[in-house]
Length: 286
Image (tube, rainbow, N blue to C red; front, side, top):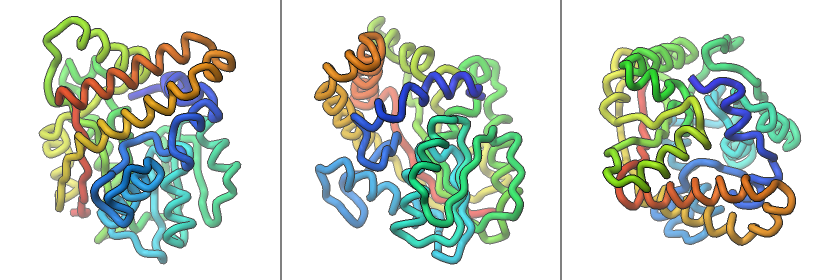
């Protein structure tokens, strides 16, 4: 599991830093360009709204529901649920103090959020639906994957989500997938930079691992992979980062710019070469 210190390193550089190159709502996960209410779209802002709309529908969310967002980031999805969909009671959990401060700053109606390890989370009441967007990757470390502990960790994650929900609930899940291992030195080094420098404590999942872990608690109703969408998302993030190079170097230092430039360049390469992909799932509570 990514520790609080790991999450701080990955997400607490500065909220204003991420605001420079993410979309205006600060989604830090793949957009969807060619499907959804705003498709087709070249706009990152609209493509991110497509993603949120698709996951909203995967979770069968209605306005009268109590909804949990596990790993809620800076609140982009909570904002979508509260403002765009009028959901009665959205709640988010995150390990990042900086992300939580941003959610509070937004003053979203009916939204609550907690700084909490999901393993310690005890909701006051059960939820009608759950969403979790690229958080499962933070639950098992590379070392735990190598020793085979990760399936049990994923299964425990799905068990907890099951306990937090009412019968009939749906769960919209999105995960980065690891597909294959690079065979040349530069690609290996760049992928290691993502894993050990940018996101220590986390590791992408395999589709088969999700299927193995989820079964006892959630029925898989639909799965859609979106590798090219994440490639386009990372390409746009990289272009925006480079457009602010001088400001980033001046305000945050050369190392921050160079680390993020290498990281986003490596992401574009990895999605292009199919080392990694993305999956979205609609799960129904068993």
